[in-house]
Image (cartoon, rainbow, N blue to C red; front, side, top):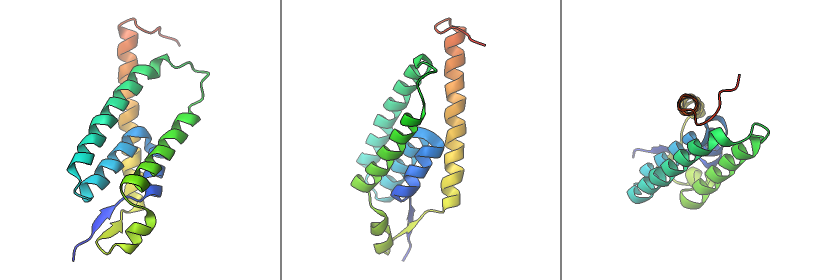
Length: 139
């Protein structure tokens, strides 16, 4: 009998903290795919994509005095809650013979990759807005 490796709520929360919303989105999508819930997987990508675009649009206009920690905590809490509510708890994974935990090293690697991608896209958006004269260039 083959097993399906999935991400636990704690792994999804850690990924959202390290890799931001892109990592949280990836882990939610992966778990829905493992559960063969295509509709929820597509909704996750659709709404997550809308959220990411909206966040990219707002990001350059947030004052520097606003701390980033509350946003990171929100990503962590939301990712953990979504996995527990719509997918499974840690105990569910332990009890299900067809499920196993993904490697924590894979969680770390995917999270770091998502962080690099998110930062690259963020810098590209900010650079484009500066080049277009929409936001001022500050040195």
